[in-house]
Length: 439
Image (cartoon, rainbow, N blue to C red; front, side):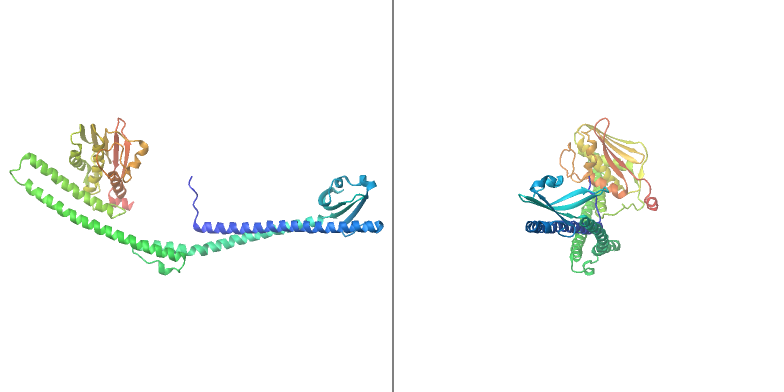
């Protein structure tokens, strides 16, 4: 399960509010615990001192010592002959201070403390009615609850203010990045920020943008150089082939081979155009009003790819079941179909490869080893090859097809063929580019 993502501002706000609330609760609980502990300790010590003084006074003069030694403190003395008169709840108490409860005639429960001293001949008891102490503890509890609520509200308010203040430089950095992207030019970010963590991030982004811009510039220059350098020898091959085909004494077999060279030269030029198109990383593939007859391009692709079969017993058929014209350069359609047909030839050792041109789409069916449905989409990733591939290859063909489809709004997918093998389905968007832009 994916973890729920929170905005940085929310995380700062929640963290500060939770920290403030936890700190306040810890303070309140500690205050209540220390007050109760200190009160019990001080009261117990006072009762023990009073009890010892009360016992000492009793031994000096039993008549004057009986009674109430202090306010709210009652003294009780039982002689050895009258131990049976000791209240039942007191009999088993050991020396020291204890906390007991008793039910009053009106039904209320009252808590009191009792100090016990048991001598051989006399038992001494001092009782202290602690209802006022309990009331003060309740008042303190209510007061601390109010303080906790007040500090919780204060923590929320400070957390909200602090989160806005802390995140403001980061939001400003993001806004400047978006503005720089919309402007289409490289703008320095570091001069707009202080020499702090956000400023350091801005400087790192500036350095990264400079390196990335340099890489893109070098890539564009490389593509332009490669395009120029490759087109020159291709133009020489094309012109030489044309001159040789014009020779009247050329044999028919040699003429057919020269025509194959001519088609391969056109295909290479189309591949260069398509790859340069991908290298520009445009959002939409340009058409410039150019349309392509898919059936005719498919026939040329089959003829160019046929040498891949070599001597394999594979039957190749083209079925034009409906006319299909797409608004895209022929070179782009040719590259897409060449990769799909080339894959079918590569994986099929015997049987048949059938290309069906239907309304809005092309099907390339083969009788090869087939594919697993859950692996079909994975085969369009760069560097991934099927299990039955023979010979060399970098696993880039289907990835190029997917990128061309993304560029022109087409769709491509692979699926198992019902009668065995695999089928590649290339679905075109046949609407003109101007109509799609208006929609």
